Length: 486
Ligand code: SF4
Image (tube, rainbow, N blue to C red):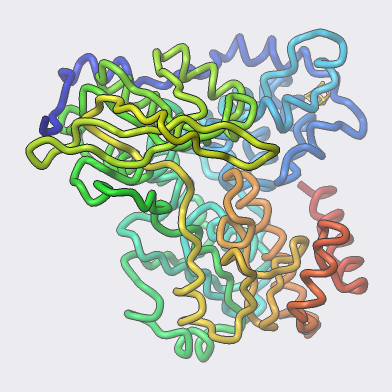
């Protein structure tokens, strides 16, 4: 059956409204006063961008939300979007000491949103401290969270930064790939304006290797940061995958962000393959767009799901179903359109998935959304940077503390370097790389060449990768100074 919009605009507006409403001023004040303002606060350590959480909460408690926002945005320029999309339950709020006292942890995410919304809604300008110009120029490839985090930090350190983005709009996953009921694209685009206000130039619709060559970048700029994220959805490699109603879950989510909701075509029965957080976003949004039945297909069991528990609970609350220990073997068509998904039972033998022959059945559906991960961009990277070290999984080999690659002038961070983590991890990595680039550009400390074999051995042994001892010391000192002044 062809796909079609299922609900009127009024119902869609209600279904897609934000699930976490903002705190009112009185609520924010009461919540802020619950904080113990811990010395050596574990919530700060749990934040990948190192926001001084007790400091900003105290400013809210004292009626200074704009000052609170400055503390947040100085540490994390994407603090407004992170307030909405961070898995706070497993980061800052998961580390809150009140949890150990059997009390509700402080609602750090909602307080962060309260402060950053205040600045945006009142049209206030944050007076960020900007260092004197160094005369150095840095090209950032990719305007997603890692690229924007890096660009903002570099600009504040006094460098001229140009960000190149192949999409029409900047922001990456924040603009196109977050469930609509968690965050609207306007929040992401407002943050981009904040980055631009630091003097960062952002050129959208520019594809490196086609519109601008790497050689041109290397001639014009003193250093490069790669924040290109991941590629298209991983293929299922099963018959019927080429049917028009088999779609990439991230592209489906992007349509929700870029097209009128009442025009989004949907199936009455939607199958989502995968069990990560993107799969959860896809299945819940399908329900909220009007699907009668939306279900997750996962070849392992509930305990092995990579989606967070709170996301899983949220999907169940929205009426999503879960088919565990089931693997797709064929997309079934009737008259050229998807009519079902042939599945087979699986079982776990150790940590291996074993198919159980003879257990196939067909689950009726009109739309199949693929959420089994994204392809790495190894082929593109090898074309653009033939000498760049890339590991066997297609991930850029880099020093995880600095983002330094084996090419002295090239740094990286975010999904293309970590394989796919949270928005806040990408911002944190971009920020760390900015400090490493700053050291490289201002102190003439060249990045030591990374030997691929040495890197692999070290990472395998310690999981922490490489960091040149002198640079480690310098970087720690720089970051420490920054935290003290934030
Ligand atoms: Fe406040 Fe909890 Fe952080 Fe302590 S751990 S400073 S109580 S938010």
